[in-house]
Image (cartoon, rainbow, N blue to C red; front, side, top):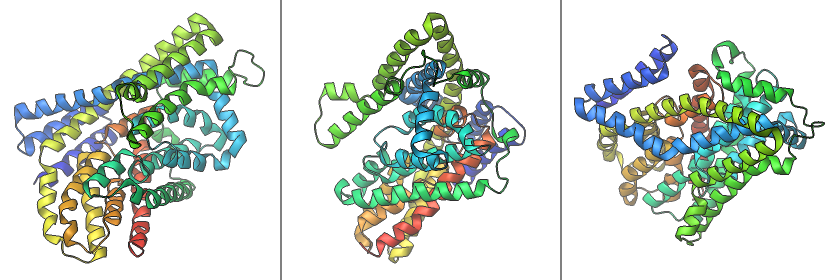
Length: 450
């Protein structure tokens, strides 16, 4: 019954938001209350899970979101984002821009937390969207979404990769080549398919876009800036520093850990929260020098105002995920599928994919779904005539399926890219579903080799 109640809770949340225009915060709390009470978690335990889920998400990403949004506000105010977008469009051209972003997100930045990636990439995407025409925003949103998660589940050292590899006893070296090939191919092919989908009147700006007023003010100011002739606009090298320095700091920590070099100083330098705080300081200094104290203060206020709603929705999204976790969903799936361990290779791969996809749909966390699915399948591997690497890739492919309303990332993505709930479903949920389905045949093809 817990599977049914979980499905009903998700339908309640989506229905309230889309059909009845209920605020996402209220809808998510109502869905959490229904699931907790209907699945037998209990009155007190349900409220405890809602509070715990909110607190845990805020502890993990609260400062990341706050710092990242304020960095974006300051860089918009100085014209730095317009400078970056102009350089990017000149380098690759508008038509190649979505593929450049999908490729970069999936291969260069998997060591960076997905939350940090979307915080830093979304302002660039919003600024670049007009260069691609009326379908620019959804196309870039889809490219970012598929790129981030393709890298997260397939490319070393993405967190989901490390979790899966550990559970199925696969070395990262054995995973490296196949994961990189599938991750990059999935990101690029999915972006192409989504671009084709957008040509058929799929996107409705009036209902699919919902830009925060303060974000509109930032973008209006950004459009007024002449990066070619305004001496106050920082140079390209200076403009990218508040983004590039945090990325390098986080990547340094991740690769040092991967190489087995660990100490408190490296952990301090590579900590994502500290890295983004350094980026915030750099953006603040840049703004003070470029636009003065008063305009910097205004940009800070706009950033704080924008981050408030994002933080609340993100936290309540974590509440629903926590209620789903305590409802016993993983145990139910483990009992359902463990009896099928003796099947042929194709059936085993499809089963691993399905377990991971179902867990993700229910739990709302790619990493938790991947870890849980690998934990369920891992002990069965000695009974299966399939390579552990291939089984791990199948779990990665399934855990990618359909990032949606029970994911705190979904709400970050929606707010940071200026989308309505429908728009976020039509971009992030669709591209991650496509990516999961696109990657599965690649995994099956690899099973014929390994």
